[in-house]
Length: 274
Length: 274
View (cartoon, rainbow over the protein chains, first blue to last red):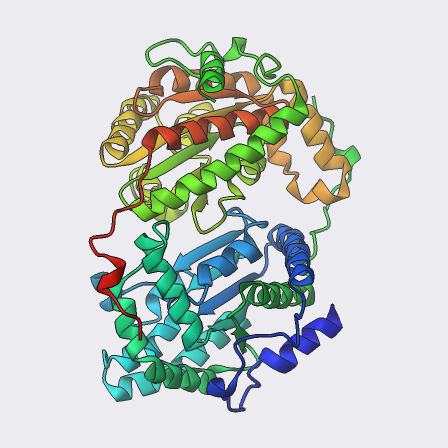
């Protein structure tokens, strides 16, 4: 397990201070998980362990875990949640999707709605998209002045440090698919009647901006991967590799947090149940 | 399936307008699910169907389902969520536990915090305890004047009718365990080191008020089981019977709602993915 997560992080971690080199990174992970069956078994095993660890985290009641999932359309954010967190279930995991901000949200600073959705103690919070959209789509589409966007990298890191320092571990995963793989997944939404409802013509507009998004992602990864909230770029063309990598890292993180069941300050014999 | 849910409802539904006769009801359901293995298989099968139906509910994006779980301490609310909703997972299901209200919540009417937690369109919301605490613990412990509590039954029904009329189906389950079964479950929390953290000495105070709680529950069931938000009393001494009953009713309800995937207003050939 330790050896595996080292192998994973050698390949997927964006070392704080280093360049992410996003556009040179692989979108498959045959070096880490060459075998599909073994990877799927590992994911199941790790999902089970995550469930047990979250139970202890809840019992302890002191800390939280925040998992940020970012990635372009069809990169597999929902699928990752299902594979890694369904075992834990809706009691232990809260998922917050961040779409276009409401008027109320826009009337506040960009981290306001994010902070409101931060997981409470004992819980694993998952963000499906996040505050990073404010330096991604906002930057690519010019939805805010350049100097406002420029200031956000430091603001984001300060906010994530605050979460970390007050008891919330922060993990960030960028699900990295190739342009070809996205083409196939979008085409499947067009062709498969069961997937039609997921197709959104505006996804094609974003696809036309592929290089601009890649640059914006690279920027965010370069500037916001920190010791307290590191980025990991997950090769995501193969769903089973993607799931296996995220599950292994989440499990390892919870094991490092080592939540403990609180010791009772009473003896069973203190009580008699009538 | 239809035959089974009829059998279940003959036994567990509180017919609107009728007396619930809570204290005469069975806490085991050997008539419905005599065989443990078959019951567990049915629960798994139904949890899978619930997952598929919720997917359609989300795609449709027009309606929601609210599942209210009530029951005295140790009655198995969390266990029910795991068995029935983990397959669906945190993407499709939001669980809201209602504990002692905060100052902010007490500064509003008692349904304010409840309304805030109502599920959004496409989602299954589960309440672990609910607005019914305001006619249960509040009544038993005299936390509000009698006339204020008295007015709440009608207020609750009006609120639930509003939810129903605006697209949210409401299901309410009272998990009914015997006083003996509770004793064993509380004792297990005292004796089993892994369960110690769940033990709360104040649960014993509530246990002393068993009859008062039973009367308060009976009142709530008598007065708030309606066509638009019916109560079901689930025999809950055997966890596998409890899970099987709730899963069957939730599945049947979603099947009756019959969510449909929206038809696209385009043809695949309208688009070419570059």
